[in-house]
Each structure stands twice: as C-alpha cells, then as structure tokens.
Length: 318
Image (cartoon, rainbow, N blue to C red; front, side, top):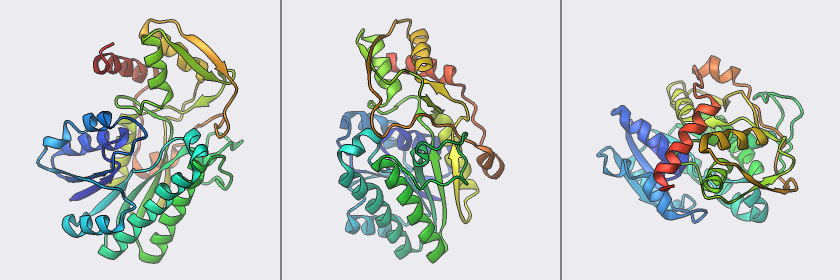
C-alpha cells in the first residue's frame, strides 16, 4: 500500500512516518514545503531516519500548487492520503487569518479535488480540539455542536471537516477526521508550551504564563496519536469524526510543576493576561474512538513529560 503523508517533515508527520516505515509493509510518499513557521533545520532533522529508507520518497512543494500535486498523484498513485499539512497555532492565526484560510482550507480542497481526479478514495484528515471552542459541556464529544470557533485556526479546521464530508457525500470517499488534543513528545514544535517551558527552565530563563494558571489541557503523547492514526487506517470506512486524546486534563500550573520536577529546576514565572483565541479547557471524550477504532492511550502525562525532558537534553545539548 502507498500512503501519501502531507506535512511529513513536521512533528506528527515525521513521527508517524517512522512508525509506518518500521512496520515494513508500506510505502510512504512524503510531501512538505518546509514552511518557515519554524527552523527548516529542525524539519530536515525530523526526516533523518526516513530519508534513507527505500520505502520512502519525498517531494518538496506547496500543496496549494495543483499542477505539482497532479503530477505527484500521476507518478505515485497513492492508495490513501493522511493529510497533516496545515498552518498551525491558535495565536498566529489571529495575526494571519488570510494565510491560515488559504493553506488550511484551499490546500485541503486541492488535495480532495486531486483525489477525485485520480480515483483515490481513502483519507485521514487531521483536525483539532480547537474546533470545540469554549464549549461548556465537558468532556467534549464528537456529537457536540462546533459552530462557534474562537480563532481563525479553529474555523479553518472546522471548514476542512465540512469539505471532507462534502467529498464523502458526492464521491463516496472514505474519510475519517481526527481531532487531536494538545499533542506533545519528542520532536514537538518549538512554539508549543512544553518545548518553550523546558527550554526556559534548563537555560534559567523566564517562563511566560498567560492567565492565573488554571487553564487546562488534555495533553496527548505522540505515540498515542500515531497509534490512533494507524487504527483509523485499519478501520477506514464511510465518514466519521473521532477525538484522539488522553481523556485526562492537566492545568497550566500542574504542567509547570511537573516540568520543574523533571528538570530539577525552579521556574521563573512572568505572568501575562489570557490571550484572545485561547480556550479555557480541552477535554476529550474518547468513547467513540475506543469502541470504533480500538484506540487505547497508554502514556501517562508525567511519564511522557519526563521522557520529553530526557529527549530535549540529548537533542539540544543541555
């Protein structure tokens, strides 16, 4: 089976690629344009294992380029698309809503249209817990209304889900939309809290904290996310939406305390007001993913944080 992974050089894409290639029974076609959201060298390093694997091929272009995408499908004929590529982050999307809409919505539409032209019927779409906004009911379940996003990023992911449903309805595509909940672990993007806080702690720098520390997140280890994606591939039929989280929440204050324990350092805190677009809490109801996919998260938060700090020390020479 040939698997096209968009956003292959990113945190989730490269981690998933390594897992799939280690299975030995798949060919992975990787697509990435090395968006300058963070250092290109980090993304190149993410692919250091895959790039020498005979079952991996890589293409460097923007998924919005319909000519290049058409030529890629014509040459490689993928059986399934795992669409991870996107402009990421809630706060940056408020500063660049047009860019986020263009990549996340038009890019997704370009993928779906190319799939239609080549008869590719199977796709996994990476959505986000941000689509739930500030829903009052917790934990968040897939049946809840998500018509009130509070950031352009969240709105773009909701739009992607709707496009996927449209192409399922019109062209009988099998598409699962997976709503990821605050993914962390080795290779995590440098703009995310656990990476930034770990770096600050180990280097004796201030940690910027927004709000009083009571906001809560359902942190999900990268190995549980890759497990969920593989389970989705195995059970892909029809159109469905699934939460992939730990179904356990951790406050910002608890996160800092755990990192202090893992690093052996005391945090120097710099408190700021809560930022626009940030939700108070994310909390996944994963009953549907357990029942339909057999998804079973296994990495406890403290265990995952200690593993991450160990990885960070090794890879950033701290």
